[in-house]
Image (cartoon, rainbow, N blue to C red; front, side, top):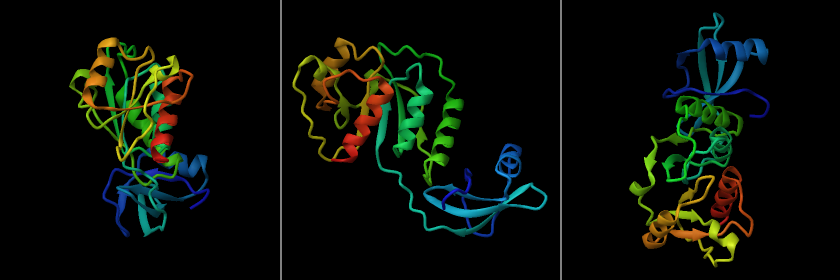
Length: 219
């Protein structure tokens, strides 16, 4: 539904149910948007809803016909200085699962993951999704099973031929701002990972993420 506020509710939504509403949502609807109606979503479905007269509840109405544009991609990435921008972008691209990976050259060591979760929710609301990506706890690169992962390989920018056939894989890995270490490249090469080229220029991690996802979605 166009031009109507969309709000994520971490609840099992159903027509006729009422859910307590956060004061920030009340302020957003009644003071900022100056309206009492909205859409609420979770778990791939969306409903119309309205603020109760006492502004304490959201009352869920009919289910809408809006189809969830979420895809089945799992996105692996090394946290960067602009992790907030990166997560905003990949959420808009529809990924289902987000997995932070700590590499040797990962420089963003102290990420506020609660804040990142809020950014993901806001991006889901804005981009018309009916679900929010599952943000997993960080893991170490050496603990990552790369056997069925598509890796954006920046070595293509240095003239090394990289295959571009993404087949039917649905997992993507983007490296850190400084690139993968030689040891990590060795692990990638031995793992059977599907390496793809994003072109002859070296892209910023957040740009590379969008390009890689778009490339896989167009497979």
